[in-house]
Amino acid sequence: MFSFSGVVLGLSLLASASAQATIDVTVGGPNGETVYSPQSVVASPGDHVIFHFNPKNHSVTQSSFNDPCTNLYGGFDSGFHPVPIGQTYGNPTFEVIVKDNNPIWVHCRQAENTAGSHCGKGMVFAVNPGFPGSNNTFAAFQAKALAIGAALSSSAGVSATTTQAIATSTYAASSGAPTIHVTVGGPNGETVYNPTNVVASPGDHVLFHFNPKNHSVTQSSFNDPCTNLYGGFDSGFHPVAIGTTSGNPTFEVIVKDNNPIWVHCRQAENTAGSHCGKGMVFAVNPGFPGSSNTFAAFQAKALAIGAALSSSAGVSATTTQTIATSTYAASSGAPTIHVTVGGPNGETVYNPTNVVASPGDHVLFTFNPKNHSVTQSSFNDPCNNLYGGFDSGFHPVPIGQTYGNPTFEVIVKDNNPIWVHCRQAENTAGSHCGKGMVFAVNAGFPGSSNTFAAFQAKALAVGAALSASAGLSVTTTAAYGSAATPQVVTVTKTVTVEVDAWTTTYAPYPSKTA
Image (tube, rainbow, N blue to C red; front, side):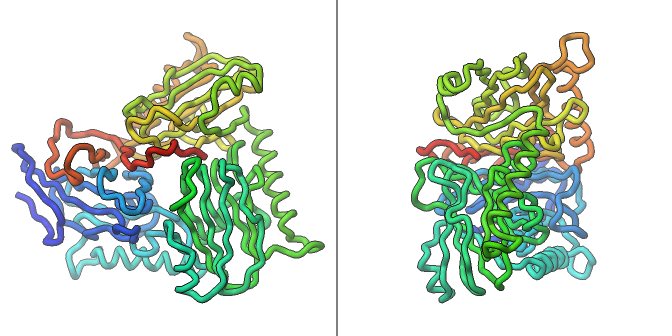
C-alpha cells in the first residue's frame, strides 16, 4: 500500500485502518552539521514525516525545485529551533503530513541570502523527488542549492563560518592567522560591540562572542548601515541568557582584503527598537580620521536611521528582561497594563486580547511558552508587519517556565488604535496571526467599523486562505515523555496546524530576550 526508501531511518505503521507510516528525519548533525538525514525519502499520501532537530540552529522550510533556497509562498516553515551542542533528549520536532505523491522540496533557511547560507551549503531535503534519469532528481535539486551558495560566496567580500563554543586555540591552530576577539552585546544585553572597530589584515580572523540578550552580526554597507548587504554574511540571532559566561556561541569572519567591512545588529530591524538604530554597529578597517568613511560617520548614519524610525512610529518601544513592574511605575508615573503573550502551554492568544489606554500608559507584554512575538500591523492588513512599526522579535520560552520570562514594553503616544499580531510562521498555514493571535490598544467601540472583533476576523480570514492554498497540513510536536524519538503517531484530525513547539531547555538560567 505504500513504498519507502531503503534509507528511511525509522518507520512504523499506524495502528489504524489507513496504515500510514511515520518517517523520521534528523535536521542537522550532532555537532551542527548542515545536513538532513536521510536527504530524501519516498512517502505515500497520509504518511507522517517527523523532523527531529539536532544542534545548532536550523529550520525545515518548504521551497521549490527551481528556487531551492527561497521560501515557497504559502508553504510550511518550522521556524528556527536552536539546540545546544550535546543535547540528545527532548529535542523539538516538526511534522509534515504528506497529502499526495507530488514532490515536496525543503531547505534550511538559516543565514539565507548570505555567504553562510545553510541551503547554499547543500542543506536541502525532498519527499518524492524524481527517480534517476528524470529532470527533478534530488541530486539536481541539491546542485541548484549549491550553485546559489557558490554565487553568494563569490559576491561577498568575506567568508564566514559559525561555530558554537569552540575554543579560540582551535582557530589559531587551524589557520595560523591572528584572531581578533569582539564581544557582541554587553553583559546585560547592552547594544554595543566591543571594540566598536578594528584594523585587520587579509587572512585575519575576527571572532565574535555573543553576550546576552539576543543579537546578530550582519554585514551592511557604509551608506545603508542598518540594511543587510545582499550576499553579505549574517550570523543569525543567538539568544544568550543573562549571566551566561561560558559556552557562548561565536561567529567567525575571515578578512579577505583591506577594504572596510561594515556590520550591524539586525535585531528589531525597521522598528523604533532597532539595535542598529541605537548605534549597535561595528567596522573592520574603517577610514582613518579625516576621511569620509570613518567609523564615527558610519555610526552617525545608523543613529540617524534610529531617530527617523522612532519619530515615524506611533509608539515608542523598548525591550527589557525581568524588570519589576514597580520600576516602571517609579520611573514614569504612568499606569502599566500587563498582557501575556501566549498561554502557559503555548496557546496562540494574547490575554487580554485588547485594552483601552491613555497617552503615556505603558503596555508590558510578558512572554509565555512557546515562541511568539509582539509585532505591530494595521487594521486592514493584520498579519503583515507595519513599516516602521515596533517588533519584539521572537522570544522562545520553555514549557513550564514561570519565572524570569522576557518582556517587551510599548509606551502609548496618543489615542489612536494600535494593532498587533504574532508573526510566528507568517505567510504559512501555521500562521499564529492566522489562528487569531492578535491584540489591540484602543480598538473601536462596538458598532464602529474597526472593532477588535473585526480586526481578529480579518486575521482569521488570512489564516483560512493560507490553509486552503497550502498543499499539505503541518503539525509540530515536542518530544515529551520517555522516548526521545516517537515511533507511532495517532491521527485524530486530518488537518492540524501547529508550528512552534519549543522543547530546547536552557534552564536553569532565565529566558532570552532581545
